Length: 65
Image 1 (cartoon, rainbow, N blue to C red):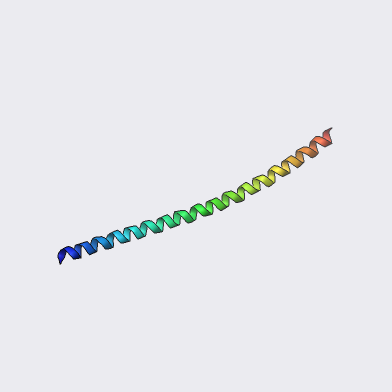
Image 2: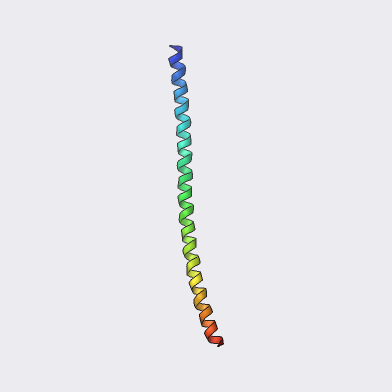
């Protein structure tokens, strides 16, 4: 009977460690998704600024010529 009890304790310990690891993985994945969304938003802002700069450069070039 003692062997079954030890086996059960080890199984519970393994299960709890796997559960903790799974929670950590989910947290990291969630943070990664959030970072990706923020990076996409920043990329869109950069594109808008790039277009504005091109328009401004075109207007300035036209005004100077």
